[in-house]
Image (cartoon, rainbow, N blue to C red; front, side):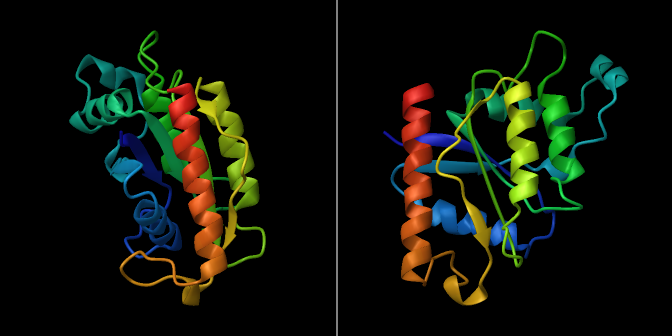
Length: 182
């Protein structure tokens, strides 16, 4: 049975490398996982006073998280950590008190950059914060992806055989993680 995954992409650009990586992962996951991207760019900055009349974008985030079997976050690295839009989504998802949408969700993190460490610092920080909000974070395999344009096609397919094999292993590990912990 296909599992649903709430997808967060930390870069808001439509042509971002991380969005392209997310598309490649979705293509490789076909038949095992179905991704639903959360539009985290429309969330207002966290403000506890907004719970009197919660914004529709916040309610949609929380509902999508609750309905999902698991979570995948694909993050760039900005200044040695992950982007604030992801932190904002984490904060909204944990509130109001007693209604933590992240709690108990199987989750995984990956990311890409042109640099050799493939957003490793951002991923490390994010994994720690996901653990703190109660997600069940997959620790292995780690996927620090150095972006290479010639390894991916516009349609989301992976054209480099070694890259495709590695990413397929990551996707299968995520599907197994969700199956085990969901």
